[in-house]
Length: 258
Figure 1 (tube, rainbow, N blue to C red):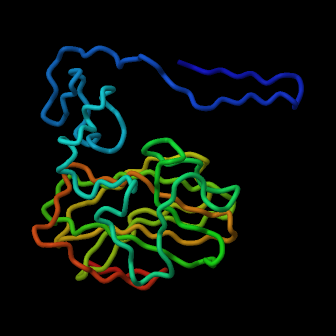
Figure 2: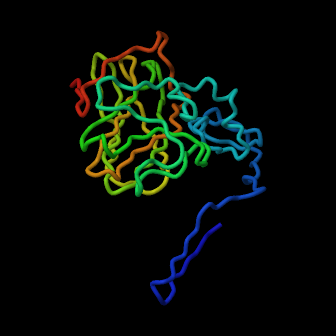
Figure 3: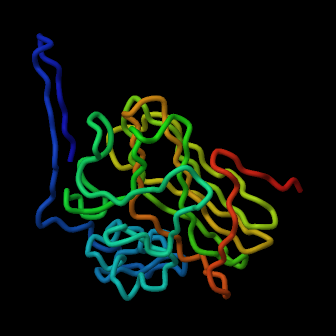
């Protein structure tokens, strides 16, 4: 399906599209070939990558890749509908991430709904970029302790960074011995939509955590939002209980040079 728009003879001719929905549609029929070991067999016999399981997106077309009994073994999968799940607020930052439904408090920034439910009643995590926060201040959440035995591990999440005052969203990976390495740094307006982001987590010599850091931008129109964080099937929880690994002071991180 393709939408095509053509400009008219006057500037008074904006064309706007919103809320496109497909009803009673199904994915293309299965080829009939068996799925490979690297793939998941959907209930409708379609094949998808194992990395697409339980990421809050219906890749199969029949929701079988998001079934609760399939996803119960996935580490720290969180939609923020009720709480932070196994994610924790840092004590070494300037303020906390907030759980929000609907629009954020400041106009000209933030989404109108969450990513999970696509509804104003749905919840997401966000950084409030206006007062009392000041430019350059940071907030962090850290995930559970993941095992160094994890293979082909990646963290998947959806971010919303829209507004002229957007600061920075960073993703760190690390542990108490080697410090935290910066894996991703998104700065400035990324568009008025939820964007899917995948970050590869290469094998480590020690158990590790993933940390999200949001930094306040230059003016109040800078709300940074997160939703639907999940880890791929190759990510394993460490055998011991979650560790309270100390984080570096807000706005800074340290590196271990090999």
